[in-house]
Image: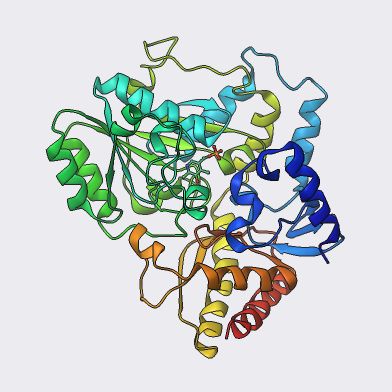
Length: 427
Ligand SMILES: *Cc1c(COP(=O)(O)O)cnc(C)c1O
């Protein structure tokens, strides 16, 4: 069934570290060889062996409208004929910036970069330059890309592979990152008190998606806003995953809390490599060439990626999010019914089209410690069973499903039906 993929992985492993260009792709945590894909169309993915899958990952979030979405493809084609990059200003950059400013409540001015990692790295440099303080607070299990400062108790692939603290990060860098507990305002206040006048920023995933999906408690985000004002540090919402995914204006719109700086990625590029960070004009003007904090990029804001991104942002309206909610709720409800009928010990966390099924005895997963207590072996078996039935899930307990508007009713029925069989197989 996976013959060509197995062979392809042997070949890629000879010339690519671990055979992949991003760790989670190797399927290590689910104990099988990765599938190599050839093509995607709408809700479907096709691998090199000719197997067909309903995609519940959407390239880790970007593909709101599914694979090779017509309008995105035509935006890319239109632009590629005029040259893909000039390394000089273009009108489309202002157009997408205006669109982002209009959509995201706290952003008045925005700088484009090429990945989420670049956005978060730049955002903390800006926060440090602006506040003239050096320490940052992050939450255990949150992931902010692979910048040195963030690979401390990190989520996502680092967590999946049991490497939340990476070698190669110097002690001095690690020392500048302080760790707090997600959904626990007091843990943040304690760290702030112990480091009074030295904290430049609190960075948080406003909805955590990199230890599986963990929703913020009522008042947690508001609590962070209050603390950052009281202790005079900036609040950074890392909305690389949630921006344009949970609402037009991201989690900050959903929970009605305005951060000082927002980082964006994933959906913003419509499937091309794009990141961004933005905030008030006063803070953003601290960046070069206007201000002293340096940050640059040869391909930043290139017309190819901007056209692809804008083609998606333009179409995000209430209807899009209604469809995403309807699709996701149907899957959520179906899974809950299956969990009950098969007597499986599992819970589901979901916000809009982001969702995780956790195999756990407890009735809530609300922080890193809870996430760590989940049964990852069970998840592996579940994942493999779903894969064999043609449903592609994230290859880790500690990642979310991302549903797209391209899922049809038949797809949804098949996902729910396969879930029931897979849960039954676990016994
Ligand atoms: C994916 C992600 C990043 C990193 O983005 P890349 O484009 O992979 O560098 C940062 N923060 C969050 C919350 C993410 O989900």
